[in-house]
Length: 269
Image (cartoon, rainbow, N blue to C red; front, top):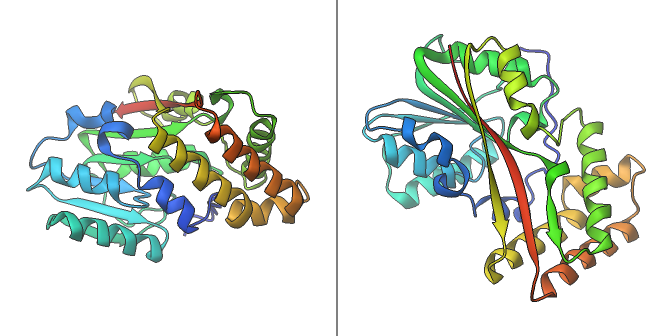
């Protein structure tokens, strides 16, 4: 055992999974696609809803991909996604990124999307990812940076939401502004060749805005984030309902726009 505890601030509410199901390799792992050639082996750490996982598996087939998550319930969702895509090159494993149960140099590519921000010791996690990656392989990580999120129109409740989320995440020993730190963490983990980039999600199309706003409105009132915000004395249920209403008011504006900046790293050596 690693002795580390990771608290997933979002939790596994249905609204969280619906939001995460919007993600694809194209919109969430474009920086990694050049590394994903047929026949390569991949470890996908924190596979979550499985939409990115399935895309990665399709790209490396007939190479095998191992989908790993700390939650067996989440792995069940990934299994469903993989089965719906008709993929037969995916293995599944319950695994702790702080102490991966794989031999040294087991994979050509090790990938983690929106994982490091939730860890008290992301450098330890990166060392483990480096350990299980082959010497000529690559570790790819991508994380959002909450402080850089920006939107229009300026709904005051969204400012409250952002401040509240960052407070809860840090009480959970995470780092919500992880994107800007990925290069530093990779170097601290011992990687000698680190390529750093950035990319953004943009929610402006009506269907994307509605998904983003409605799932956040639900998460603010009904998910693990809501429970912990109240438990930590950072908000009341009435506060959370007001913030949820703010999300819906934002989406109702015809000129609504939201952007999420991400840091990305390809690490070798």
